[in-house]
Image 1 (cartoon, rainbow, N blue to C red):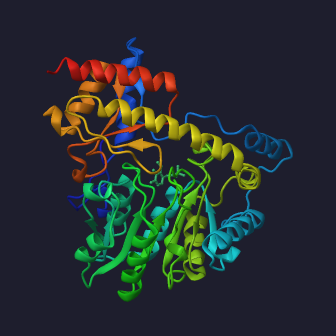
Image 2: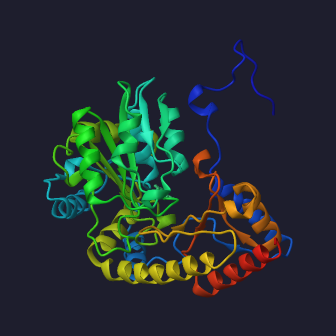
Length: 398
Ligand code: PLP
């Protein structure tokens, strides 16, 4: 069906005109098409745990459904879950977080969008990680803001620094987005850098949106640092977190935001008028994850660490590929400039010729040129097979 004709030449709003599909889903569709034609493809494109949701968590969800916990709940989430998140965050950060500062939603993504809608005004600039999760740029633009990419810094294991942020500050800067550990690079921002970024935010009266969805997945000995722990940050920080990655719950759709209460109230209103509320049985499964999921979380993390070492080691033995070892998340972001092809061409050829689905670095913004992203949340057997295929493909190039 054609579009309704009206007097304006632009059929849609500015808020949606700029939206692009997420690279991971596009590659997944192309990979599935090849599989339907009988090709064997190893999927290293989608960023999701290969583990099933731990049994105690799934059982809590199933039990909740059998008990009829299948109705509307309050828009901001179950009190019990909000209290638990507030308590755990308070003890982790040393700040007093009340349950009124916690809002539950269907995944972490809604909090990227809704907090931006509540804070970013037309013309405001937002400094965001680039290469970075594509939703950041999408949400800044949808809110009418101007995205200011922070750019890539290989000298610092890709981690965003206060210096980079300082150089991009203008009187119009409204917010800084952090994502540590990072998708797609796995970089973790050090405690000292977080302190320096916090000082900039306080001095310039800025908001900081800290996407901590990979918080549980770090491979260093250091305790995880959140910018929320830094002085003066309670009143200007939005922590975005969730259960998708740490507890292998991507399809349950459960996430949360922690923010100053007046903002939490506005975000709750946005939830009321968009999704209504989050499924109650999903939230009850989330309570079990937080109360009893620690051991499962640690077991998954230890396994990811072994897989990371395997992948980094093998990639570094290949001619034309250089791969840093990420401190967190479950991605490697190797430099492929030595293959003398664009990121997109390498990703296309790996899929079509070698049967390995990966993402071009440019799926995370133009600063990702020269890189590809591989997700190592996959079995050791699949990873070894994928690496054999990549190695053979690289060999036949020379
Ligand atoms: N933030 C980052 C950096 C991510 O990589 C993802 C998912 O890939 C999300 C947020 C979204 O998480 P959720 O599935 O809980 O909405």
